Length: 252
Image (cartoon, rainbow, N blue to C red):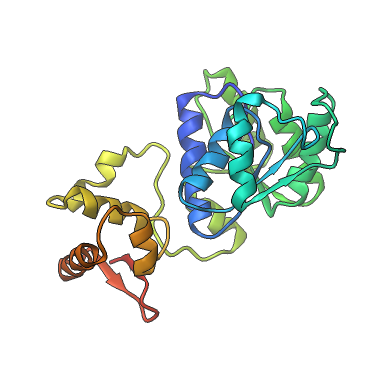
């Protein structure tokens, strides 16, 4: 997943929704550690303890941008940091377009979230097309310069991406939970769960990404196991959640 460094709030939200959804399905999110869309994609995957890979345009000893130094090490703890350059290679301008072929090359598909008519994201899309990969583009406001590139890609045949479920459908993968639409307000999404307390709403949110065992839910909640178990039982009785044959909880 790639996009402009100077993204809008719309682009940020779209990147976060897509990344969290995919990471929640056990899919690794690959990006370039750049500012903007790349950063939000990496952080969203890490937020739910998903897998993410960063492909650098410099050597490992020259983290760029420096504002992502902490993110660099966080990714390295559970994911991977890749570079074709020697450790001391500086972040030269020409390195970044070249590394984009690796981002697309190791990915099943490429998602462009926001891009101007010219930029690194469109270079990645071109590499992906030449490599026979599926290219997805998030449509944007026709008056926004930062969506000119993605809208142009859609006109040229890229798969329009308005919901993360589109990715699974296009790639022939099976989804097990409903996805959030980019324009859907989270408060609106929760209005059908009137009467649920804050902890129950958090459980619902966690299960909207993937099915979870009790220990997985426990690690994401600030509750004793006895309290959590009671809440889960009450939610099952209200037909909000249920358990599958493997003991995993999912939305009913």
